[in-house]
Length: 317
Image (cartoon, rainbow, N blue to C red):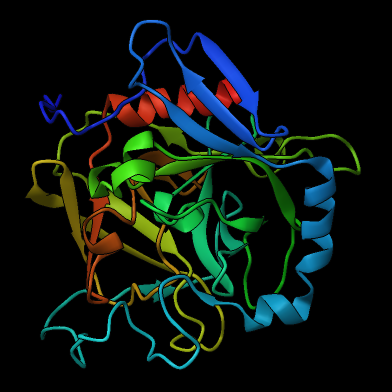
């Protein structure tokens, strides 16, 4: 199902990325084409020195103390202060489990403190890309990119069977950066290879497959990392349900338990238990940055915009 976007406020990437420019001391990456000056995405490149500092920064104590993005240390475990006490009667509820190799906790610092979201490994020719919500790695209009970004695959009860991996590139759509467009609430992270053997993240933990234009009604699993204050055992959560259309460019998923921290969770269709991977049709985010209550979640509809941003990320990775 192809959604025809006619909104002039959208700044999307072209399908053919033909130029890349690194400016500001190598910290900023601008991807553009010669045909459309508005079709740009500005990423943030992370130096080897900064990546090494990130490895030192995330001690076990800091990881334990990190709180979900979007809440303060004193806030109740929810998506918003307006959250009601419980989900409606009969609502589906997520199940805690021990995680997936391609799914992980995404730790970051955004200027307000140490936080975490959810990210997952996605297919790319360089085998080093993650997908998450844009709001996990960039604050939107008037803000900037997060720092000290690190990915821990299959993080479970503070165990790290695959270690910690640092980011080398963060990139979100220009429409998110300029106007916090909820229909563009997705982003990519290029991960540095493992120092011990040079292997890329997808070579070690596998990857899901990015898909687009799959319509609004799909049976999906949504897997993510909820608020540790709500799930004190510190396990990820999963739930299976059928998505529905929320609005022109937004999908909806109903299941309780998706507190802050699950932002960026992949929406997996055609999940195969034997291989433990599936096809990503969305990531938890979008409208209300994923939802104002724990039992209704949202995701931006995936079409050419996410496809082209992945191409840009892969080129610069």
